[in-house]
Image (cartoon, rainbow, N blue to C red; front, side):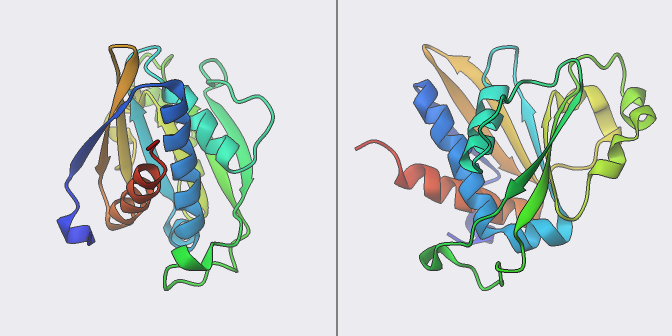
Length: 193
């Protein structure tokens, strides 16, 4: 499916926590494939949803997919948790036309703006400096930063549905569309038979 054919919003049902983990690992795999684009431009992923909808669980699985083994908590009080993640050499079967071997790591910033009283706190904290080339910014509660937050490459909306979750994914840039296409390809190919 080409970028032009990719729908703006795509929904999937995540019936179990294992499905949420599988989606997080698909995001880690996507970073392997698109490391040069992320290194050149950065990647912003906004995660929205009520408390308990699975935002932190998804980010934790994403980081586990990178091999992060320590605690991964929601940075509700700290607001920001930084990680340096290794990007393995891609599987030649999934290699894009871009040269990945020059990218060995990326900065991963896990933000949680839940405690922001208003959007001016984003600017006052100086967090804008964390966005850009070589950086993945995964943001919980992006709406609390308002219009001060740059436009997301990928948007994720999570909602509790029955015993599981429903996720709606959207792309806001060409890089976001390419990344989302890779995520969905990996996620759908690993579905239980």
